[in-house]
View 1 (cartoon, rainbow, N blue to C red):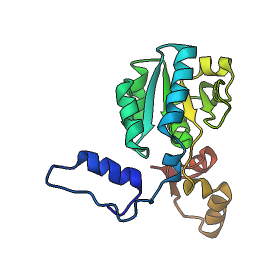
View 2: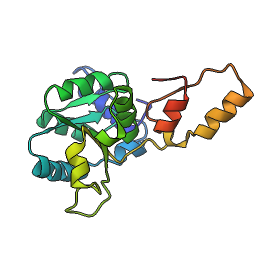
View 3: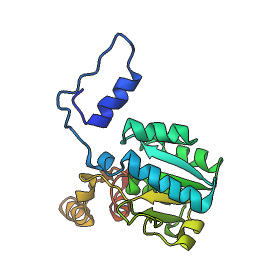
Length: 195
């Protein structure tokens, strides 16, 4: 499996008994997946449920470890892909009023925006924050939130900028620009499509 560790791990979970998954480079990592450890997510979940009770559905992006996928399964949550994230959020809101979305804040935010969720209804959870706090968020903001976003991102998609889109449009006025929803909101908003 010539890809990153979480992809090979997922393939290994889904494989048939007669199949074997080989990852040529066991250090092939994903910076985004590495931004959400199971220990940090467990701690955040404990703080959030202590503050808000049973009002959250955990949703992890496919680009996460098997431990986080299992965490979602244990806590009534689900795994999403970039193409089904909106359907997954709809599913989650049918069950509880809030979604705890990790590890990619941008996919969560861009999906929320596409569904009409405002920035006031989303809050960023800073997993690097000091122990005992609410992820750097104010309690009032968390209480108003429909989506709590983990402060993680894809280091590759983070590099794409509004300036690059403007330069491409200036050089090629008829160009159609398509970006991935892991990009920052201003980049996704400036593109012709995302997916």
